[in-house]
Image 1: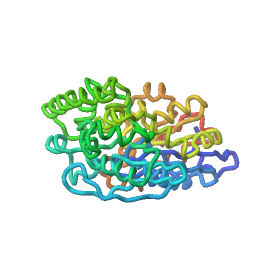
Image 2 (image 1 turned 90 degrees about the horizontal axis):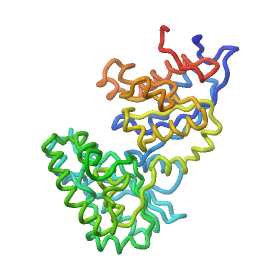
Image 3 (image 1 turned 90 degrees about the vertical axis):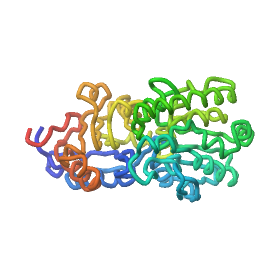
Image 4 (image 1 turned 60 degrees about the vertical axis):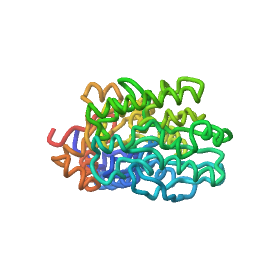
Length: 375
């Protein structure tokens, strides 16, 4: 492919939809979208860019929605350990809907340091229950809880305790439409459950994972009994350390967080108007394809035969997997920066530079994969 910065007479003006998720703790979705926009415009200034940051319910869920609806509220709640934290949530008065984000109350970023077996055992979801309390006090008729990025694996027990227990919590929420905005499809227990899949990411070693699994198994019996059905085996029950299962036991339903955000950001119309779609996240791997933003967008792009470019902090998928997912090209910030460390501490600038390089490799047609520089 000829090197084409997008300014030559043979260049086609492209309509580019920029719709990333957050990049871990390095960049929010809003910041990432701004960086990608800046980098793309640097190499292809005549293209038409549409900005629509996304979230799957994890960190950034409230911030992304706040760009489109409601007013941001702030509540002082219990953090994942003992320190209190200020948690933002969103109130949409027109629909009497509260949008909460568990990462605001029990997120990994709130631990005050790297996760460890100690924090994996101690972290709890009490602050999420306090946010639900705040929403009820505001008169919420609908509560949407964004799940993802949690430090806890307590199965939502802390949240339930703050609401007065399972029986009381179910009564308090009986007339409220409760939705778990879920970023994963896994159950509560077993080899694909909250402890075994996500425990190691939260600092748990093998012995700690076993303890967490045992705790969750005992709690699952109570959840299933309260709900009258096996909520612990439901898709999404393992989200946010099992908070998904607790929300189901309280009478909630699971819905894709990515689809909730997509509705509120008019993503369908934006996709229909685009020539190429750019998305990204902190790590693009097999988990990304199961309920997360990039996987959801990959499915949407494939259905529309829309070229998809992925810019991620790191990439854990090989070329056959990328092709199977419908990804035209994927680039890692860590590879561009030369190290994971630099990619983390200078994320915005590195993402701008990487995007500019990728955009410069795109010619008049976005259908052919952009080649790395020098080819």
